[in-house]
Image (cartoon, rainbow, N blue to C red; front, top):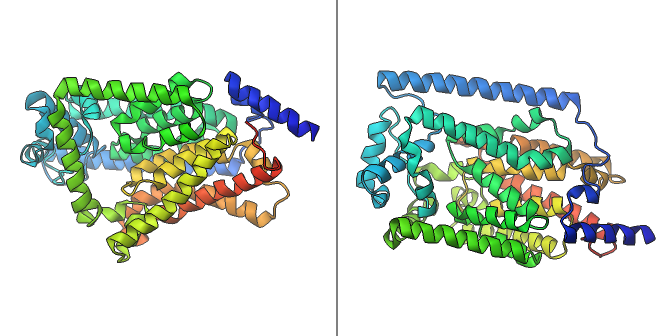
Length: 435
């Protein structure tokens, strides 16, 4: 009993003084990852590189010959690049006008006829305005450098605590799928990881990163809830100020009409694409909502199932932050719950899963598995391997739709794993919290 009380005192002191997680014992007693896992990760990484190289050759060849071929590497980045060009040469508001946007993107990328959609707020449109100053191949190269650096920064601290080799981290398919898609999910990964990790020890930094998520606000909408439950007032205040300044600057840059156009575009997209599945979008969405619609559920039933899963996940996460559970559990739960809380979520956002994976494989977490039946540990290990591979499976399911999106099941199962760890942590501390 005395030992438990002493541990609680140490952890409370760590939380209040901003000490690193080393004071909680995280990272101590590290267990080296098996050589077989490292070799397997290397094979997966090599296979991904070969596919990307073949894709690049096909794209560049079709571009030179002017014939249809593979989409350009970073096929969503071409949307960002085109919007940048329209913003610079026509008008920011014209990016939301299909009569301007579609001819422009087909002019610059004639070998790939799918135009895509522009659905980002002015805070992001303002940020990418200079992108088209570079030719697209050079812009994509810059995007890769920035995104890989963001990914490395997002995982650096958690990788060290979890004792993962860099090879296994960098081979994570979510990184390469995001680069292939040309999306900003690696930037938002860095912002969310830093916001959750440092909200207690460095609240101004955490709040700043949370506020910068205004570039993709649907991913940040639950952050205030976590911080209200955890009484992270300084981080919440910094987030509100940062997001507010970003919105004010975007208004000064473009005015309110651009925000009106953004809201109107999102509303149309939700009604025509998300709810009705235009363009086979449901096959690219690893969500309960999309799976329900694909299997014939009505719109109210699909939303009800989505609310059930999202509500349970958000409630568990809010409780963890309110009880100040160990930081790895809070971060893992918050990131998975944020993904589950999105009715519209595409495969490239699964890059976020690398941080929950690191949190759930920390040595201290592994100790909680001791004394449990071997079957439960084997199941947890199998689940974590499946989640590591999930971004790759999610992308393959877009190419071959009968495969289906396994994330519909794996994301809730990951949340259940967090819940199981939570129950055992709660029992181990006799219903008290350690921070």
